[in-house]
Image 1: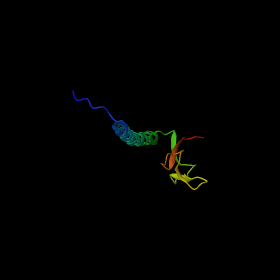
Image 2: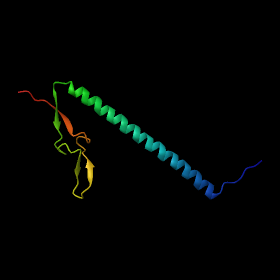
Image 3: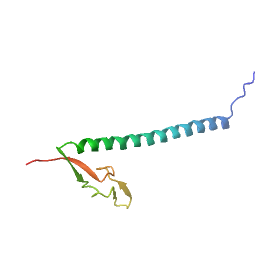
Image 4: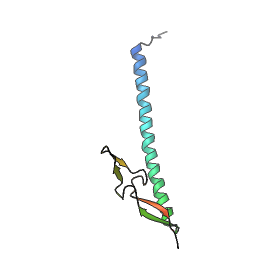
Length: 94
């Protein structure tokens, strides 16, 4: 019977390996989510483009710049259009 007792260093290494695996899994999921989100946005754009009640307008928040600059000077992706430069709005007839 060869049951070697784990040292604290062994336990730390095991925990670090587990942590690294979870970080990699999380990063892969974030990449996959980003891809799916972009595909969904494209599908939504195509659907709205065929809808005569919708009109594509320049994003009023970023003015088609994809981002805006905060007071601290940090560039942030526009939360209104998601960096797409435009939004869809209902077309008013009348």
